[in-house]
Image (cartoon, rainbow, N blue to C red):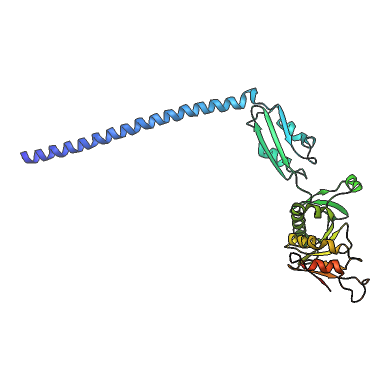
Length: 295
């Protein structure tokens, strides 16, 4: 009986010690949790007070709206946005709604609106680059580098002339979208890499499947460009331009689609059997220039 009583006593003590350890551990966890909750409460209270101050103090009410925009997006075109912002709290203003409204302007390609402490709102507007003109339903329309319509050309601009080429042969519907993208992309490449040549362009015809037909303001015959390699085509043309420009009359067309060869198709006015003159032959002997071939 004594041995059984001692065993029961030891077991009871073991259970009591285990319970005591778990109680101490739970109490430590509880104290730590209470401390964390107290810290969170203090931070939350401070944050709420700070937010209340930011959204109610007149110090943060907008007094001025500043615009950074181009010639076609003057600040006067965005008076409604400025009026919505003036006198409002800087931190409660719905910036995305204002941005969406600003993007409705035909010449607003991208709009960034940001807060300038303590009481100013800044609006930066990026304009699309007009790359070409397209005739749409009897009206001349600006087209950007992605082939998107911007807006109709103003009458006074047509009177004084425009300095971008005409994009022709675009068709309609889905065909038009693809051709607009292809032609505008080619023109944008030329504008960025060969600006002097781009200024000489009169028109670009995109009605042909795999090639583009280029007309210059200062030369009679058209040029055939490969639609995927217009930069190489211009580089080859410039390499032989000194010789080609002296040939009279201008050829029926000049085919620049080939990598190492330029094909010139004479007009009916050329004499039968006509061959290149000496400057032309001298140019073709230059290994750095593409070979000229008269059909």
